[in-house]
Structure formats: C-alpha cells, structure tokens
Image (cartoon, rainbow, N blue to C red; front, side, top):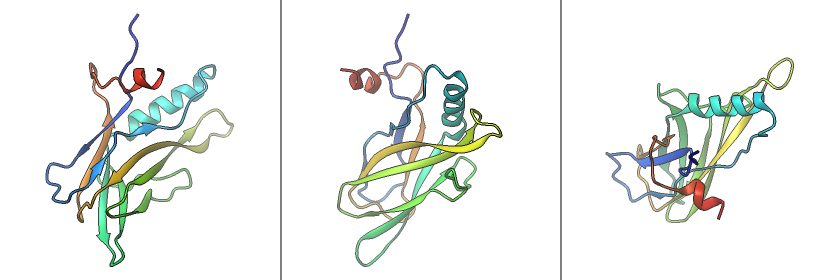
Length: 152
C-alpha cells in the first residue's frame, strides 16, 4: 500500500503579481470523522468541488490594512456556511494568519444543513491590488511530503 505523503492543497502566486507578497502553503484545519463515511465523503467532495480558488488582494488603506476576497474558478465569491462571501484583511509588512472558512452541505443531518471547512495560510510582505494567490488540489505524484512530515 502507498501512503499519501503530500498535503491535499497547494498554493501558488499569480504569474502577474507585482507586489512583494509571500505566503505559506495552505493547511486544511478541518478533520473528518473517519468512522462516519457520509461526513468523510461530504468533506472530500467539498474540497474537490471548491478547488481551485483564488485569493484576490484589494486596496490598501493609508494605515497599511489591505482587503482580500476569495473567488472560485468562475470568478464568483466563495461563500461561508452562512452564505456570506469569504473575505478579510491583512496588515502589509507583517506575517498575517489567514483563515478561510468555506461552506458546504452537511448530509449527516436531516434535513441537510450547512457547515464549513477551514483552510489556513500565512500572507506576508506587501501584495499589490489585484495580486492573487491560487489554492488548488495538490497534483498526483507531488513530492511536497507535508502530510508525512505532519505525523512525525
């Protein structure tokens, strides 16, 4: 048997980024109950169906606060479990923990409800307006080993 050594999600900076923004690779903070096949399937499908996503940097205020929004592959806002667009702010020039709460349908309840999975990454430096950071599924055969390193 083979073990999945790579983490499920990978981030990349936009090719046309012109700022000095840096990032860490995303971490999936949400864990599924391996004994609940419906919950595990819901989470797996939610991650697969939401990717790829793109973090788009907004305007910077005079105090260095910068907004961001999360959009899907069609350019529509990614929604949290309450139906609100996922967005937030960072402070330029600092290391900013960014937690993205992505909503999906929870079929473990009757009727089905809404829940969310959380992706966390760190943004740093000074991204410019419209700089992007894409979050997608890690490709097959990736050798990033983040899953394997997490269990050591």
